[in-house]
Structures are given as C-alpha cells and as structure tokens.
Amino acid sequence: MSARIGAGLPILRVESLRCWFPIRRGLLQRVVGHVRAVDDVDLEVPSGGTLALVGESGCGKTTVGRAILRLVAAQAGRIWFDGIDLAQLSPEQLRPYRRAIQIVFQDPSASLDPRMRVRDAVAEGMRNFGIGASEAERTARVEALFERVRLDPREIWRYPHEFSGGQRQRICIARALALEPRLVVCDESTSALDVSIQAQILNLLRELQRDLGLSYLFITHDLGVVRYLAQRVAVMYLGQIVEEGDAAQIFAEPRHPYTRALLAAAPSLDPARRGRVRGIAGDVPSPSRPPSGCRFHPRCPEVMARCSQQEPPVERLAGGSSRCFLAAPGAPEAPPDPSRGFSGA
Image (cartoon, rainbow, N blue to C red):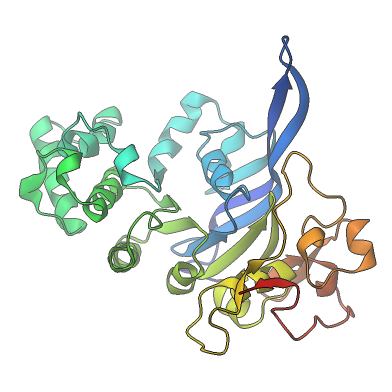
C-alpha cells in the first residue's frame, strides 16, 4: 500500500460492510424484506488525512459512519482500526476504542442536552473515561478546549441555547476533542450552518488536523466542502461505493457516470453552465428494492444494454477504483457531454 498521508497506512479500513434493516409487517411482525442501507462497502481513511464520503441523501453514508462506531449493528464485514477488527469486539473490549473514535453530528442543537451546562456536556466523557484527577482539573481542561475551538472560556457555565449555531458546533467539536481521539467522524457537520460559518468551521477542522494529527471521515453531500477539506473521496450510491480515489483526480477526471452527474449538478460559477443543470434525472430507487445489475443504470446517461443485467465489478485503477463497466480496460470512452441525460432548467 503506497504512502498517501503522514505515515502512509490507513488508520481505518472497512471491508465488505453490510447493514440491512428488516421490514416487518402484519400482526406477527414477520420479516418481509430488508432495507439494504449499506451493501458491500469498502473504504480507507488515511492516517492524518481526510476521506470524504459523498452521495445524495438516503444513499447510506450516515449508516456507514454509525456502523463504524458500532451505533448500528452490521450484519457482515470488518472494521479495522489500527489493525484491530472492531466488528469482532465485545462491548467491554470496544470501550477503549470508543474514546479513540469520536463523532460530530449534523445538528448541534440536537447533540447537546438543553438542561446541561456546556461545561458539563464537554466534561461528561472525561468523567466516564477517568480523564482528569478532579472536577477542578476537568474544568481547566474544558476551558483549554474552549480556547482551542475559538470560544471564550469564561462562557463554559452557560446553557446551549445561549450560543449561536456555529458556536454550538464548536462546543460539539470541543466535546469530541475532550477524549483525545485519533479519528473523528464528521456527519454533515457543516450542512446546518450558513456559508460564512461553514467556512470558519472548516478552517477550524483543518487547523485541528494539522496541530493534533487527527484523521477525519467527513460525510457530506457538499462537493465544495470536499474540494476544500479532503485528500481522498469515496462516492456512494444506493448503499454501494461506486468510485473512490484521490480528490484531485476525481474532480479533474471522474470515472463513474454518477460522479460526473454529481459534479455536473453542483453549483457553478461558469456562466455557460449556471442554471443549465439542476440534478440527475429520475428518482432514487428504494434501497429495499434496488435495481438489478448496476444500481445506477435507471438514471445513467451512459447506460449500456448489459448494465441492467449484470452487476459491474469493482475495477482497480491508478489511485482508486470504480464500479462501472466503462472503467474496465478497453471500454469505450464516455460521452463527452456531462449534461446528457440530466434534467435541465
């Protein structure tokens, strides 16, 4: 495995992860099907770097993050953190790793108990893991964390509603940092903020990564955030990773039609493209009844006859991979017009 960030080896490696949720009906609540939220997902988070997990709402990316933290149960797969398979650990064995892997959720208001002073919210994890010899020492650590995330340490005794949305998200970041994690899962952690506050939080995350050597799994649908923060990108569609690789390569030369679709549908400063493309044609199929063959084929502008009949293999490519027949050696080139097959203005 080639060096990418820092020491070069991934801090987290997920292999063949599957999370299916049963659909129950009737008086006896019999299982009549499954929602295939995550279906055979592989990904790696570089040590000291950022992997962005990108896709439309409902594609399963949040479930991947929660499965890594064992907040939802996975039916199959392996979750390697520092060479240890977290999926095989008992709750007691998992406890030290809960400190090493933290999460920052999308909505800071829902993440903080409104009845708890923010000092106690940040110090709660320290108390649970025995960090700090006394409450006075923990209070000093909370004050230092507030300074680290650019908040006034004199305000640690206030309640969450007394802070703005951006300040509350900084408090959530401080709470994650309180346990000195090595990996932080950021689940749409800037999407609930306005653009100017987003930029401040992203700058803070980059600064923390530089100073503390943190690794991030950054779950988002915002390609602008990905371009700014991530070194690696995994693109997810209907429970599967359809493309993975270096961020610069994916933005410059995407190999999967869905990735090209996301980039074409993203807001653009180019007057020739502005307003021309709104999004991908058609609706996302239900994860309880995914299409046969390639899951993207009902909406794909580059679909071929076999796409509806055969599931494309994962093609290993220089710097990444793509789950598409067009990525196979000797495959015909994709049509040059990225807006073909998309809904227009």
